[in-house]
Length: 638
Image (cartoon, rainbow, N blue to C red):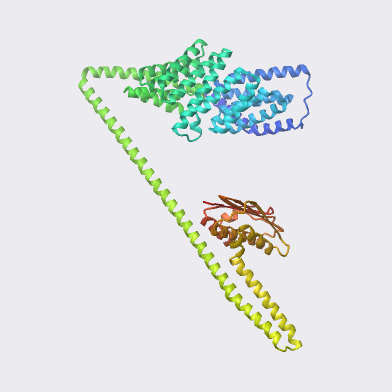
């Protein structure tokens, strides 16, 4: 029967948690509607409103009391409060209940939902213009991003809160947010890569914040805050590998916590004391501090995170050669860490495990005492062999691990070199193809212009001379003039082709003038309209850079003319000493860029990519059906 009740309770708690997560988004929609005035104020008397407010605040107080003991029970009270405040539609109470829901999500590591709740409460308070509540919610958001290991956002929210508290001279809140800023800086190396020098600066900054926080707590007489601040400073000095300095601060923390009879503070400070003694290699004192922390935690049901205490306790046992206790502590750590039970079940398991291990230890002591009387020499010999074997295995394991790390690093270095060589090969190949193509274009343009162009011009001159010196019948004059007209057209077309293959304007006047001539020539008919906008200075780049950018823009405009059905094509060119940037947009029919990823891209796009690769530049395409196309090309000038 008890088993059934327990199973039903577990399923009900899980169901409530899942429901809460699902309702976070719907609650956000309700709050948005309330803020936009889409809900009328509820028709309730003042007496009923006051009564509901008191009830809501009582629910939230109960939720806060259960927050650390049993978060899922806390959620039940939060839901009751939300039901009342949404019925009464009091924005201030909605904000507080929603904030409490955010605290529940934060305790369950549901960071997206927690952020949503805090942001919605912040919207309400900004509308109500309650500065202190705005600061509180900014501080809460700073904590969310701290747990998500996003340093910049966490710092920004905490700083906003600090600025408001300081303007309002709210000393307790200033002390609280200073402590949060200290914790954030002491943990910065978890959020982003930091060098040793940077970590040292972070630690010193954290200590400065903690010291300021302690001074503020001293003003208000908050001894718990002072104790926590000293414990935090000690933890930072431990991270700086200065346990001797940390010891004084942690002793202060313990004294303050004992003075206010704060079991949680005493247990946490003793845990830090144990780690400090371990760093000082005073292993017996370390074990004593950990054991006292364990005892206080079990007596007061402070079992949240107790697995880490057992993990830490295993280390001094191992250092003193007490491998059995080290082993049992580590087993406890693994058992509790992997447990799926709630905190009460975890505490019972730990107590049973403690009794069981104590009984086993007593039996082992009796057995070993009996054996010691009979076989002292064998025990000593076996102990020596085991120690030597353990040291040998440990040494061999470390040696293998070190060799594996070195081998993996060598493989990674070789793979990086191969990737770099392949990239360089592709770059050289693309550059060679481009240079060969431009050389061939130049040769063909010269041959067409100087060879065939000169020949056609000679033919025209001869025909014109014949017309003047030869008697032509009236019937043949029209045909002769038509032939001369076709010859003029052919010469113009030949010159246009030669110019497109190797524009002389580009060589003499630069990229801007060459593109202006190109736009004028292409849009001579008026449709589509082609515009060119130039930004920056008219800098002359190398012939290779200017020609490559000219060819790319030329190809992009030609593609738009052929495929986009656009009525407007815009070219923007940005010229800087170290960067050349071009953007070509059109208002045509567009296309799905995903089709290009499936191998359905044209030869023109491939040519452009090859040219950009040859110049070690960047190339990007954005397009949607019916929304036109935007293509950008960026080259960096070395």
